[in-house]
Amino acid sequence: MQAPSASTLTLFALIPLVAWRVYSRFRRLVGRQRLSKVRPWITLAIFPALLVLLGFAAHAHLERLWWLAGGLGLGALLGIFGLRKTRFEPTPEGLFYTPNAHLGIALSLLFVVRLMFRLIEVYAIAPGTAHGMDDFARSPLTLAVFGLLAGYYMTYAIGLLRWRFRVLRAKRAREALTPEA
Image (cartoon, rainbow, N blue to C red; front, top):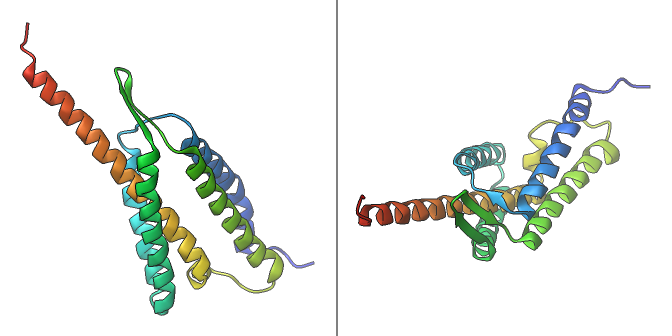
């Protein structure tokens, strides 16, 4: 029997982390949440960086970049749709929002299905083939799904930040208009 490769061992080590992140993302996409001051900024830092890395990995094949860009555009449209379906609640306890559950479940399932298919493809269909990080940039479908998710999350984060700034600006305006006692 052949010893597992380093990439297989890394995958097995990362499975619990990925499972935890999928679970936490699913919970976050479905229920009422307090708006974090930093989470949207983290989203707006990480996803563009990942897009640049994937774009660089796929730059030799222009058609793959079109799949990434198409997914990104569709994701931005879904983000706008999601923001319109989101219930925003400014309360004395803080700012809360409830994303559209159907859209959140659909995006979570899309991510999980693509991840599972990719793992089956890499480790069951062609187990003897050496795989590297650039394999993810070879698959147009993976690029499209990542672009879709990145476009959605970045657009949604921008929408949350805009709403937060609008609420805080209105609060400051009200405070400026009220005479001090």
